[in-house]
Length: 170
Image (tube, rainbow, N blue to C red):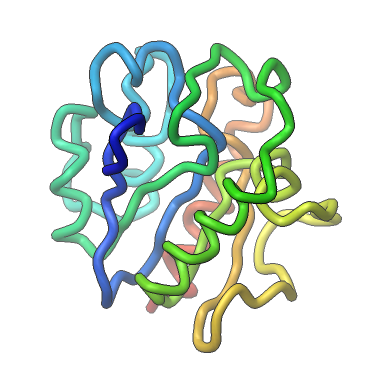
């Protein structure tokens, strides 16, 4: 964790997947844990899709590593109630994220929303699911519908994407 990061990177080598968000939510920044907002669906989705044997609580976010799951964000010094309220990421923020992902070298990188993909890579995401972009050799890229409650109208599709990623992990 850098001196100014609101949340620590939960990364290590050998991970199956690293989920990437844009920035901490206001709830997460206050709690010091990923996806801590009471209406965020991330932890229930992980469990429902079969990534974890039980639903983890935000304060147990470090336990995700035991299940081969890493967590990080693009804008580590920022918190926001919505991604569209964030300033554009800097080139340095993008490079730092890509360096961290290359060092961890997970099997998959999953961007938690098309906007996160666009912010992190500087290009539009045309479809959900597996992408053609390859951040590092041996790493594949996936984009899912955001776990934010703002995306609940796509709840069934979102869960299907989480399940598809879990299936691809084997």
